Image (cartoon, rainbow, N blue to C red; front, top):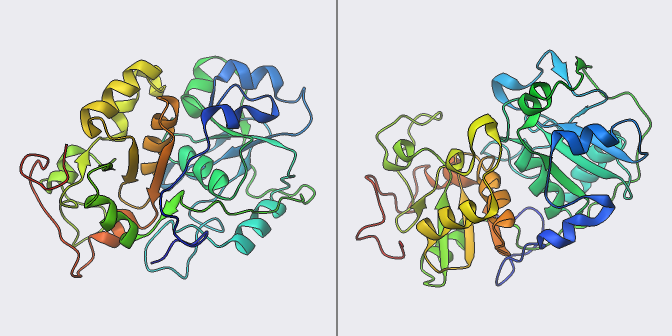
Length: 307
């Protein structure tokens, strides 16, 4: 699978946290209080529910939230692996159908906390849209703070928007790019799955897949979060990434199907890293029978390219 947004770039470049502060956003992460103060009060604030799996189609939503359907129109279903980024024409049409304008400010959440919302955030940035943030703690944090919810609407039925995708090269990369990164002493490939799935001691959701990329390091996305599903402070995030990647600043992220890898991308952005990329196919692609190398066990020690 090739990079669906653009030709591969020599080095992936992520927009800085400061760039995401456009549209009144304080950065790539906003609190429930920040959103509640603006919801319904400021024009051009769009809220997306990007829940997947068992949380998709939950009975409650933040008032007015629109469905960012990663299991539906916002994945490329011609791909052999799940949650593949759609091309720019499909993405443009999907966002216009959801009523998004190029001048809007977008906040994304999910019903689990911070799980699939970061994927929607990264996709929008990969398509050249930086006025987007993730709701810290997602729907659980929103309801814990006592903010209102309403029944979920099956579809968005409002007016169309004028959003236009402008793909930014290098934020989503393919297997060949990741293979090169594994051989690059200046780069680190970090795996967002649980340590047990990384080691191959726990079953994968997709049969027949087991282990990890030799040379990658384990950094489960859940370890970047604290009680309540909130992201850890920037200094703690920096410590977590340094433990996994050492002094390397060029970071590539993988997971099961390219979803929770984006939680690592969010955490790294908050921690001040800027040279970031997500492997779109992730383990769903790399782990398929092929000539790509696979390792099991705890990893790191003795593996070329590991911290």
